[in-house]
Amino acid sequence: MRFEDLQLIQPLLRAVRQQGYTEPTPIQTQAIPHVLTGRDLIGLAQTGTGKTAAFALPILQRLIDADTRHGGKTRCFVQVLVLAPTRELASQISESFSAYGQHTQLRQTTIFGGVSQRPQVSELKRGVNIVVATPGRLLDLMNQGLIRLDRLEVLVLDEADRMLDMGFMPDIKRIIAGLPVRRQTLLFSATMPPDIEQLARTILVDPVQVAVAPESTTVEAIEQRVFFVEKGDKRKLLQHLLDDYNMH
Ligand code: AMP
Image (cartoon, rainbow, N blue to C red; front, side, top):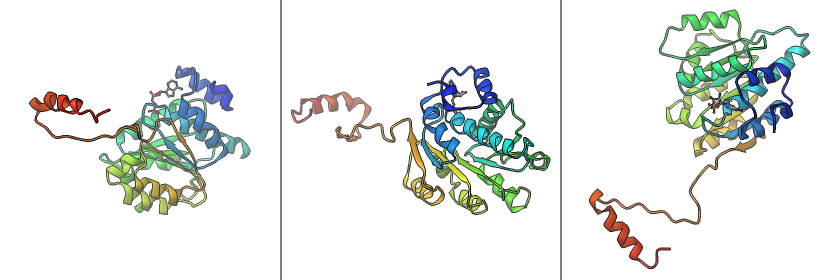
């Protein structure tokens, strides 16, 4: 499979080549065609699988296509919101959007807490198409009326399970309550704990699910048990267990 086979347009193919990517990763091969059609998607994938490009490339393409339909004039309002658990991840995602979108007119910015909000607010005022944000600061700006999301087209929740672990779920629910109901929603998570499954059920519409690593890597047929022993007794315990003829 080549990037060309994924029906990506030239400005994106050029950017991908400049990144040195020769072929799409499995999550990209699986996710890109669905995201291009506008479908909601659940992606079970960890960082390192190339999941950022799996959503960023088709999202950029959809924005460019929409612009072309509107006479080629880049429209400047927040069309895409990506929520990520940490400032570091948000910055990485932003860098990826910049790299993949370098041959387009689309504008983007990053929003996170722990720093002054002023530069972030002025960036928003200049007009951006894509916002990558951590939930706390974004909600803060929403509550102050400093960001308009009423024309949002795509929402991405990245590393949803980590956002849950970090206690962001109430913030995320409040943010989503302030977004247009008609939108494309993409949810990426390395694992699917019940709370994330429940969230997915409420915010995604008829999602397609793609996975690149099995949710659980343990083999069902193997029974596992934990024994707490002193370090010095480990070898004796192992010997004892192996002597048991019931142990296969
Ligand atoms: P991610 O899982 O999105 O954090 O990506 C992990 C790393 O893989 C990043 O450094 C990307 O630049 C890189 N990457 C993404 N897609 C590809 C690809 N198709 N070929 C080679 N490297 C890639």
